[in-house]
Length: 413
Image 1 (cartoon, rainbow, N blue to C red):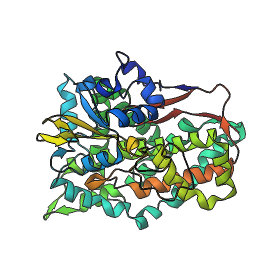
Image 2 (image 1 turned 180 degrees about the horizontal axis):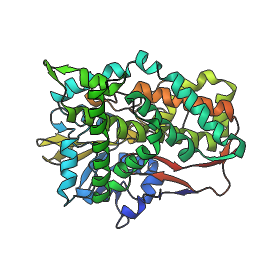
Image 3 (image 1 turned 120 degrees about the vertical axis):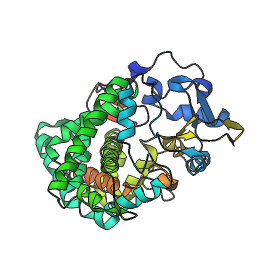
């Protein structure tokens, strides 16, 4: 059984039920959160670029080629607000929180995007990422040790959601014991905050205050961490502004945590519900890397967005300035024109040009780290707990909106 209320209550955000997905879709609808795949299939056949007036209006492409083409439209489409499906806020504090601490480079357009992305790429190179493998592996082993003797666990809340916050904290050089706070803040921004502006404002403020304090500390006491590296960098001979550094940290916290724990949780859900696939990886761990790519394709968690800057004709649709377009990477990954047997999760799939990490200039800069976390998290879990399945009568809860993934995943072993 799958529930869609995750404690932050996405389902409650929905007003009226959807009658026509082509003209009135709602990504907060319980049916969409629980199982969006048949909805995308139907739209591809009849209305591949859907529209809705809900949540201030947006467009939803569903075909692989269309999503890729739109993601590469620069400067026609702007990335200044990549999380756009939300109600308007009358509270100027929310606008101030967003304008003072943004999330570069993902929320930046060229030329700012160009240098802000260049700043962080060295920290996420394959070599730099590999340096975090021992920490990540020990973390996963320690987490498993806390519940393995119980024979049951909420694999989302007690495992998947505990890994990225601590890895990101390790990368930034902040206190990993604040992980529970990070989870709360991220859920506040990307969970209830998407439908409740006052919640979004509150948690954006907390994130801003936290990182501005960390920046002040690094200026007085530099460390061997990413925050210190960003503060030591220069752009055209000038230091990187503090607010830009805080914004980049905001990006790593919000985007680097929710997306990765959603992917880890979805992978564990799949293995808990598909015993043959689980056994395949237990019998041959060398197949894990390939399996991770397929799980990323099949359960891609992130739907980013763009804002139209000038009137644009696309596939018979006219986009007007100010229109919002959802970069439906999860839907693109299920397009049968791009993937053979697209709705089949084949852990040994060889041709897999998925776009789970996006495409174009805004492709996820942290993809190497996300892959590492997934590989270690799933590998260590299977090594310690080779047999597991959903608890009888379990209510698996999924979060929706622009980041989809399990939030409660009761399994037994």
